[in-house]
Image 1: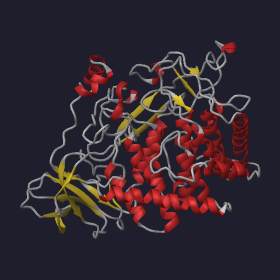
Image 2 (image 1 turned 90 degrees about the vertical axis):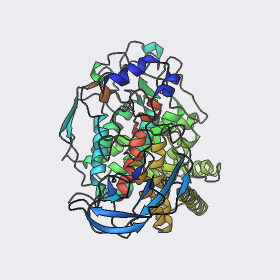
Image 3 (image 1 turned 45 degrees about the vertical axis):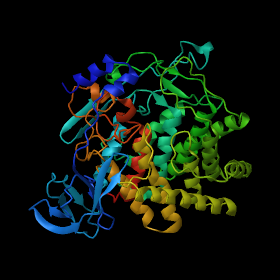
Image 4 (image 1 turned 60 degrees about the horizontal axis):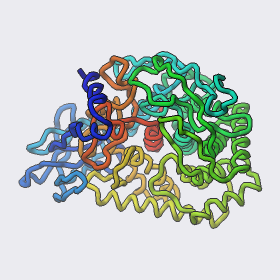
Length: 555
């Protein structure tokens, strides 16, 4: 019945009406807490809803023997307007002893059990990376998670046809196999693939020393590359195939319409290269330049291939700096088009850091000056300039002093705006708005916040990152984890085709679902609701960066 009910809902009503028909996830009284756990030297807290006015305290209890280890006062009661709840806080930041605990408030169910540990996010990082492995296209995949075996056959081996990229080559197949499926569907989109990979390459450039020891259940494990980079290479190898001889890059490789809820190997519809666009070409230039720097110490030949791809893409874009919008009129799959200005800035930054070409620097300075070096507080695909700005500040290359000063100022300003939002939110999340994929935005705040920490050295920015992870793993109005396969009551019915079609009760693990939209009361844990319950690689990449900050490496 688990698989059947969402499928019936899918075809029973129109798309817009579906969302009104879904039963909203109930908001019950309870103790909402990060069900993964806490780092010893960071803030620790929970949000309490429904406690009697006569109750003023809470207890922290050791799970092993139910010994009370701490008693504290609940905070003042105040209205959290987004979810129309009266909330109170429970702070136990002073507790640093390692172990498993839960919170008790009289008259309410006990909270989920959680850990306090130095390596509390290590398993979460592993599960997140397994999620990317599970998104692989063109190869068989098999792994075990919590005693359940997840498996799928090689798929989409005819990727892809050139009919729409070049009508004179209609019927011809160009090798486009590989890469990650983008989301709950089986499309492959350059703009989001590059954005996601760029975030993860940035995580490596910041935290590679720890991530170097991460062991993954992938075929390449134990090879010449660290496992983390081997997984990224699988996606980058596909992106290289999306580039054509003249340096231009196909926007995406998909069917003409979204497919059925079936396993990827059963999806036999023809898939096509979509015409080129300046945004896709800029994104490829950016991510291959970034990757060339990262991979050079491990594989100089591969780094040279990446540099060549970046150079060709840069030349193609510089020949046509105005936007070339890809013709997607024959397609009803994900659009992923945005004006290319942001991603051109990302490309200029990464390419200049790679090559040091003097001709690029004036373009780079002028491109960022157009927006007075503005840093986006909340950014997503199509706005890669934040990644480029982070790369510039994280590098050892001497920057234009004005550019450096203004970027630092804007990152601090953007981060402080997030801190202000946290202080006025009942669950301490840094984004007040609700939109498609908002959970990815919440996770992605970690990039700006960590940059502010690097600039200032102030721990308040790291504390803010911890607060966002708290929200995503259970300190939210639902009291549930938003990541499949981990935490308390994680999503069970994501809009994810393998999870729906494989005949297994558990969904594929490691995916951050999009989250409530357009209000905090509007999450539906049902398969048809792509609007709130789908996964996407950019959201998974964003929480990957946040987790990497606190990843301790394998002992």
